Length: 179
Image (cartoon, rainbow, N blue to C red):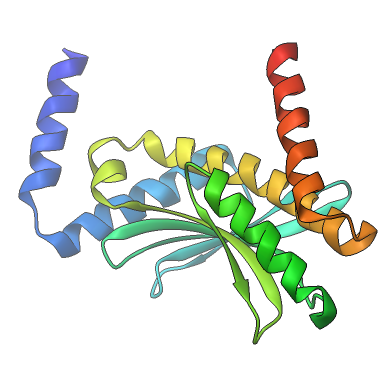
């Protein structure tokens, strides 16, 4: 019976207009945030939600979740006001990440001098499978912590980007072994 209900729900969601797709996913996202009982800033007109989570040890990050332009996106700044003399190393580290990441991209904004990690997906996925919203939130959060760790190591310890990526891969491999 549950499979039939899910199937009919998907058929209905596909049959409505594209504008309605955004409204449905937006309502699913708000419902997910409310059920998790997270304190959030909800911006109805712009269709985005801002949450604060710990991104590093004793450091909070502002996470933005947005529905629009036929996609669902998650965004967080992992570093701000970086020194311009480290710009080359920052771009190299971002390139390493973008070559390794299966989901999302690391963006460097040289004008605003900030680095962000963004995960986007076509709106059709969370429209048909509302549970995927939670999966994307977790994936974005967990990956953002690694991206934050790497860029903090670059900015604070002036470690070479290749060494940082090698250490991160080693750290992730050790964590997999522990599971």
